[in-house]
Length: 328
Image (cartoon, rainbow, N blue to C red):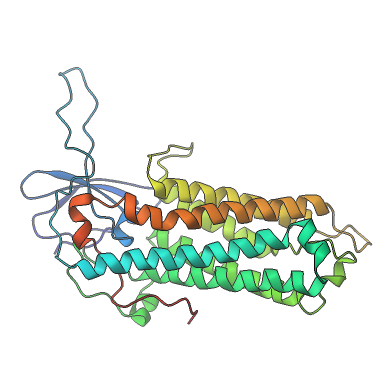
């Protein structure tokens, strides 16, 4: 195996032709096999077990037309025959998606004025608190997925234990930063929402108010979403690559911005018990929740649609056991 900074271990004879990514991170790479064939590796596809992609053909140049491309989606790299790992990746996507979806529904419901008017303030507060638990559960599984990504390109090495993965945090991996910061943000949401259950939102002086995400939690979500978006987007301006993963990252970024708007609008006016803009608090929380719901629903779609067909039976997965929704 060949060790290349920020990339998984390469099989003997493989070389990295080109690497790119934001700042010090490597999120995309072009790899050349011993037989000369070139494939594209991305950090998101690697940890989700979606396989390698054939490199797109170069654009025509002065010397003549571009070479004929290999059809996108055709696997050029062998992988260990392990159907169980592919099924594990699919199950992991369903669990993460389901947990984020339930949490999003809770946040969306708790920000609907009609719901808030129909139930007691304590019920509204607990709606957000329960939703925050589902968010944290999903964020934990997402961090575990990133931390236990295969160490080698073809996932032939045994997966690391959870303790070893936690201790071996690598600062040069953008996906670890994204999932870790988001996990911290969800824990801060736990603190803010469970604090609200002690007063049933009465501190706001108006039961029509929906509890907005805590400011620090919203900042964490914004930072984490930027990391996740930068991982799949090449450059500063939006550049969709027609992958489901790009759409998920874009939706989560939009949702984090909406949560941030709600957090700013939730500040109390000086010398009063009134929030600056109740309507914006509810709208921002609702829009943010809907965006995260959309991203959650697309997670299993990504697992099914973006996987390289020829590599599907043996897609590398960083897990050797079924997922659990329980935060450990």
